[in-house]
Image 1 (tube, rainbow, N blue to C red):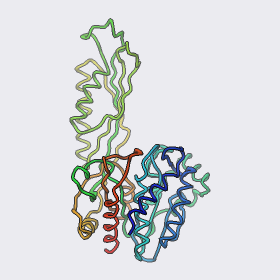
Image 2: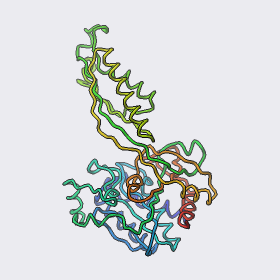
Image 3: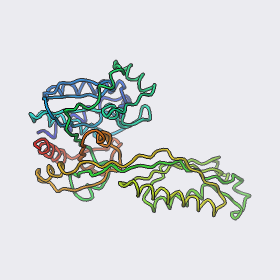
Image 4: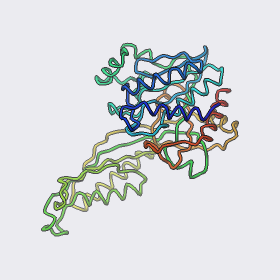
Length: 371
């Protein structure tokens, strides 16, 4: 099998973009139509019968009877790299081209959630949980597809299991000098908007002991968040003038854990800390939950056997990012294999892969298909 061809195809697809000079390809955009035009003949050359389902997933199928589905996504974040998602589809096509086993390769139309702020539009249709908002349905029609056919996009009964290849998008494998990892779970996520309310006043005339500074309260709390292993990804201050004590500080909190009980405990601890800090500083704190996504356990046994049979160390890890595998897992057994991300870089033009790691993933896929 040809690891160089897999990488070359990923870079060729990077030319399909809605933003010249960058890699930006969103749900059913003109760039996605161009990507389909490139990927379709590659699938056909691999012996697959190619169709586009009613949400724009590109699907290639070969053989009758129970089959393995291999997939990932063809969309990108704005100004992305060439491999996030796309690598998994190209590996699937290469495996199909070098195997006679019944197989289905899927290039999902939307995982990132950029165009309509809703992720997993492609894979949700496969499990019977389609996104039916007006904007999504209009985009489907504009692409020349008929939303009435969305129920037929569900995974066929012949699909016995699902396998996804994806770059790690982090530095762990590189730090361990390992090419691959078996993902045992996708972490659950809790997201909140937290607001500290104080009193805006003149920065030059208000003594420190009489201030009710919302930003300093938020800053103290952010240190707690870091110690708990969670993230504040954004903060906004009002009124936002250099010479005015901040009266309001709003922040976005992201808590992720492989276990839902631990995630909820950690979230409660962090929010309780916000309340304690606010009370001590004479502030008011409010919060609103924006997301409560459970953790998803994935299949590992068959993939671990394939990794070992291919001659590589078996390393397990948890994914902190969401993937199509976590959606498909509610319908069929799903496995996810990570490839090392050099420099831990992803969602960035510098994102890359090592040829030897792609070759390793192809060997694992070959072993997996034999089971």
